[in-house]
Image (cartoon, one colour):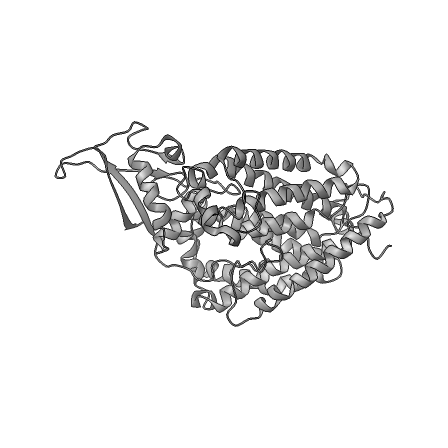
Length: 445
C-alpha cells in the first residue's frame, strides 16, 4: 500500500505528535492553575450552575452528570500525564492503537473542559488544539509510516487557519487593505510582549511591508502547501518564519506555536536532509496493519464530510471567524484580528481602605500579563494562556462582562486568596477588610 504510506514524512510525524502533545500539556497545566478560580464550584462563573442551566444543550463533556473541583483536577492531571508521555514518545513505541488511545484520551479530556469553560475557553485556539489532537491520534506509531490521508489533512488544517485569517483581514478593517494596520497593532494587541515596543517603533514603511508580507503568507502561500516537493516545504518554511515573527512580537497563547507545529506536515524528510545532511533518514517501517488502514479510511471520510461547511465559509461573503460547525470541535473555521483598534484603553481596578473620600489613596491591582503601569516592561507568557488577562482586554473593547467581572470585583473586595494569586500584585495583600472600597474605570494607556 505505497499510496497509503507517507514514507518521507517521519520528521513531520514526530514534530506533529510531540508538538501537539506538548501544547496539550501546557493547556492542562493552565487548567489546573486557573480553572477552579475562574470556573470552579466557587469560581467567577461556577460550572455546576452552568451545567444545570444548559441541561441537554450541553456539549460532549465528562462533567455532564457531575462536576466537582476534585474531578476537574483529576481529569486535567491525568490529561497532563498522558500528554507528557506522548511528548517523551512512550506510547509511540507500542502498536498504533496505544498512541491512538492516548491522543483520544487527552482530546476527550480537554473537550470536556472546553465545553464547560464558557467565556474563559471561548478562544479559537481551543478548537484548534482539539482538532489537531483528534487528527494526531491517527498518525500511527513509530514502526509504521504515517498515513498520507492524515498528512494531507494537517495541511488542510494549516490552509484553513492561514487562508481564513488572511481573508478575514482583507474583508475586515480597511487598515489591512491600505497597509496601515501595523501602525497600531503592536501597541493595541491584547497582551504585548517584551519586544512589542520595538516592533511598534519600526519605521512606517517597514510596517507596510509587514502587512504585504502577511497577506502573501496567509492568502497566497497556503495554496502551495499542496504542491509537489520541495515547493510544499518552502511554503511551510514561509509559514513558520511568519509565525516566529508573531511569537517575537506578542503574546497570543499557543496560536502561533501550534501553527508552526502543524506547518511541519508539509516538510519532507528529503528536503530536510538536503538542507541538513546530518539529519538521519528513517525508512525502516513495517507493513501497515489492515485494521489501521480501515480506521484511517473511516476517519478520512468523516473529516472529508465535515470539511464542506468550513470550505464554504472560507469563500462566504459573511465569513465566520473561529467557528465550530459540530459539537466535537472537528474541522473548524479560524481567523483573527479582522479589525484593528487604533487606541488602547485599559480597565483599571483600584481599591482603598480609607473611609474618607477626600483623603483616600487609591491603589491599583496589577495583572500578570494585562498592561497596567506604562513603566512596567511586559513579560513573555505565550504559549501559556492567561485567560483572565485576555478577557480584561475584551472588556476594555466594550465586551459584556457583567457575569464574570462583577464577581471578580466581589472576590477582590473579600481579598479571596485564590483570586489574588491570579494577579501580579494586590495592593492590600490577602487580609480581609470590611472597610475596603473598590473602583474600576477605563483609561487610555
